[in-house]
Length: 246
Image (cartoon, rainbow, N blue to C red; front, side, top):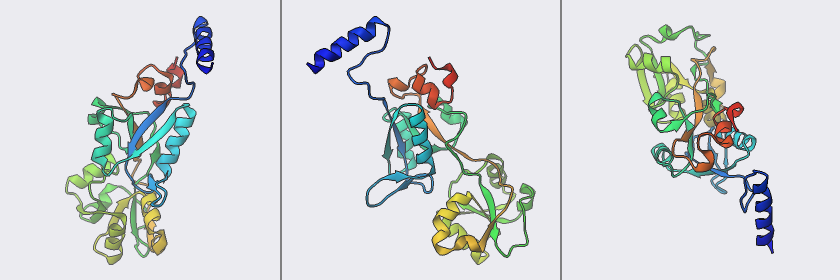
């Protein structure tokens, strides 16, 4: 009987030009990610995901009337490749890069902006960020392979400052407090999340203004599922082009 009712509904819907399916549930978008606090945080007991990027993505999927399935992978390369070849529909969180446009579509606005900042010890006489020239010849610590801000990254790669790379936020802070480096460059949210338990924020100071903006994006795979293909309302919504949606 339920099947016959469904058929009758479909015939009626088609007769007025409406789309029809046996389920009126919203489509599901599958997104790969890695655990990268505070943007993506995983509860070790329940496996539940939270964090600034996760919350922003949930808000976006609700606004676009699409269900969300997040798939945690062990590495960024795995998350990226799953999205690139279309196993999943997209990946978070990622930086915008020109060479990724061959495989991904980026919305105009990021999910979150980490606003990387120079960080000094609380007893430092330096009170503000006055331009990259102040870093010339100084020892500056960043997370290994971190891309913080285009102009800053270019300056550091030029050799104008002494680049020190460490694997995590705790190591960065240890280098600063020991006096082995003059500055840390990182997002305040990263430092505060990892260091609050040790009351580290009381021993360091974030310089203003920030180095710039560092948007962390949802990148949609160009091989994404059909319900997110170009021209659909869901795709237009996720990419910030609702006015062009049918």
